[in-house]
Image 1 (spheres, helix red, strand yellow):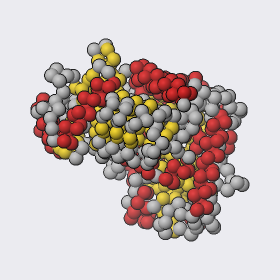
Image 2 (cartoon, rainbow, N blue to C red):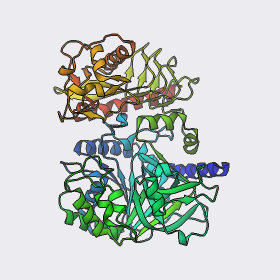
Image 3 (tube, one colour):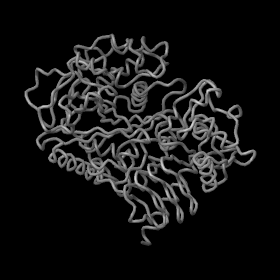
Image 4 (cartoon, rainbow, N blue to C red):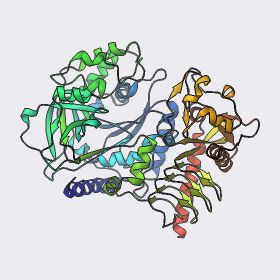
Length: 579
């Protein structure tokens, strides 16, 4: 990668951050910012959590004022995917704004879901994950707003659709502007290695209209491929050859992959008509795979029968896809090629740790700090990330670890490659490497209680087995779960699983003790974790109630969580004033 590329990307990104900072806490002028910012939620509980936090952020002047911030939850029942969420959000916007909708510039951020691969974001939501920059400290919402800060003034009324856990950085020439002013769909595209294309959407472009490479180009798309094989990319003509040092990768071949897309108002209205045609949604619709694959002159209906990338195949999925295809066929798909760009995904514990503690390019581009909005952090700590926390100066945090929303008392040590989230860690405790520890407030028998969940950073919380008889197949900190139970004085037959009894996973296994306060909760869970690693025994006290991560979300005490966060915020402010 050329130094010039690196420098330009960093300069462009810092300028976008500066622009958002100038808008935070003040009324934006006409056309200067979004008219409406919509955040999607998976259910009413998540909607309430988002609404409360966004309202508080606006009151603290952390967001631009004047825009309408809306949170829409998916309807109860079966999962409808981000495509279903898009359709339902458009309906709710139409119900609220009516004819005025045709004049609005709307940002729609898909943030619904339980974040099973990044469970520290499960309770309060991934769009509100903290990031180590800004004053007041940024959360993912502000970063999304910053990266798109130039768009509203250069777009016709319509909707920009994006996801909460990805970040697009780009630079363009001074004379260029990213404009969303064409009918139909307009998508951003990023040069990516072919291996990345197999897990993303890939654009097949009309290469005849291309004469040279520049930082930004406009192109039309022949068709869109969703998570294609490398053979399919080659066969479809999606593979390009590198002819410039603009690109951020060393590969000689690349494809253009998707991230964010815009639809003009007429197209949004067409999708509203599609929702009426589909009726109540009973399957998962992908806002990328199911909408964009219907577009372009070379799109065919064949993809509608391909369910290889579907997690759960519902009976009506193919019929719904075919209705979408026929409804959208012929709609233009324009593509803005951002040749000087990078796409980052922060949706797993490993990605979170890597980007915040190891990825020096990412940290330079955004100006990330090793310690943000925290007090008493030992200046000798390096290679770690501390956010929104209070630490005793004697604490040690090894490289590769993230500490957020936590209190660490005297002499606490945190091993490398760990995540410590919303915890109160008592004096002298040592946390192992590669651990995920997260304390949640729950409402149990009408009282506020605390549960500290713990997993290995590499544990797969989504993997399930059919019954407790197969618990040996679930890996917990590198050991099979049955072996772990023996260290806690438990039999696999006695373990309960919340929710669907035919799906037993680390997510719904009732393993974690319910305690009266944060500190005892953390200490008891840490003792259970250390018993596994040391080969000792540490059974919870007799008659201790055990909950699963799934239980904790169902019983979360949102008000208490936000109250504790406010108290921590106040303590940090006071601590900073006294330094």
